[in-house]
Amino acid sequence: MRSSVHLPALQLGENQSLKKADEWRRLLTITPVLLWVCWKDEHDRIPNIEPTISPNAKTRPTHSQNCKALYFAILLLCAGVRMLASRKISMSQARIGQDFLTQYNRTLQQLGIDLTINNHLSTHFAKFIKLYGPIYGWWLFAFERFHGMFEKVNTNGHDGGCMELTLMRYWVRCHLIYEYLLALPANTYTKEREYIEAVIKSEGRSEHGGMMTELAIYRSEATTDRVKLPRVLGKHINLCIFLGPGTGGIYCLALDYCQHLYPDLHLIDDLSLGHGTAFVVTRVACMLTYICKDGIRYGSDSNKRTKADRYAFIVDKNTNEHCPVEIAALLGIKVAEKAPHICVVIHRMVSDEDIPPFPWCTYSDLLGIHVSYANRFHGYEIVPAVALDAPLALIPIHSERMGQELWASISFDHTGNEPEVMDDDDEV
Image (cartoon, rainbow, N blue to C red; front, side):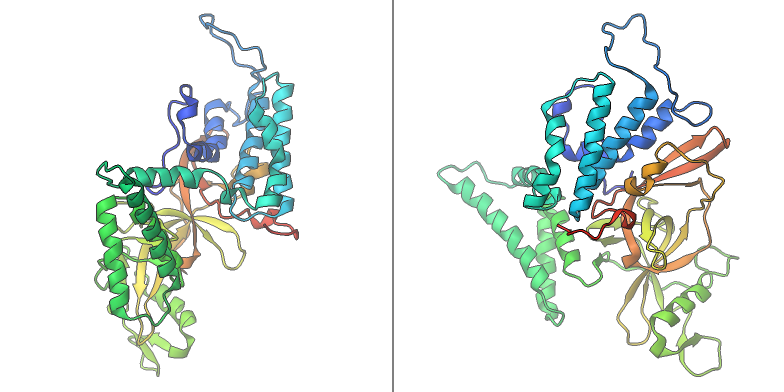
């Protein structure tokens, strides 16, 4: 699991009411794969049987426990929640998401499972989305998070209105900084930006997370490419030996990438005698330990301290498809007088038609699940940092039919639904 993604709720059998709503959402994101791992048979299928009940069981369930029926019912729930929880949604998608939940409720009834008032309320989401917009805009996650932020504010226990005044000042300061960051023009004075940075760092040291995370997201929204760099940048690297001796490095790959990026510079090999701007092997690129895009941290395999956050989904610019990749390196490139450019060295995970279908395949695009061979990658590619699309949860699985280890990559993107399910309806 990524460092920027909270772990799913544990000990689900007790105190369900104490679990946070976001924990349930995270759990539903990975549930289709987890249940398959637990319930699959020797043919990688969900068995169409009921498990035996222990003779020592204190209570015996009255509803059906058919594994296959329960699995596909839960799959409908996961698909509905995934679609309805998107930040952007059309009314057509809202009706489809609500239909998933309606089918889920009907399946539970057929299995003899008792329903609650929440099951009924879930059949009216489309009506409220039409009135108030995406659920993301009016659910309670933000209030829960703000309450957590307020709990960290040092009020010194003063009464007589002082405590309320302190909380109000904190709240107003957060929003003023947010609005100020978004309103900063491109030609802002350096000292002005440095002052804002000092405020952010000061808040980050005092809050250790909450305020710092919010400001990181605010700052990323205020930039053109939504990418934030570490405070300490790496030294220049030799592109001919980078990513391992004997590999030839990535010099030719980087040169070709920059030639398309800066066609006006007429970049040439630094050993070439032709006319143009030399792409000097040891002076154009430096390695970054991490970057933050839209407030999400991404690492790389070349980071010597930690390999965390090195997997992600990218959007292929040619096909507009979401592809799981391993980030081999994060590079900052500076050529001639051009502004520094942040790019990512990746290799895509290998997947082909020999991988058998899984029970969730009907909804794989909607659920953001991609299956590939474990530890197998295509060759290196370089893409801009803005191509990074979403965090990724990697679940190692074993296919009994293939007798091979596989990886199930699950996208934690909730900004919108996959293009395949987009409709020409009004977006809300």
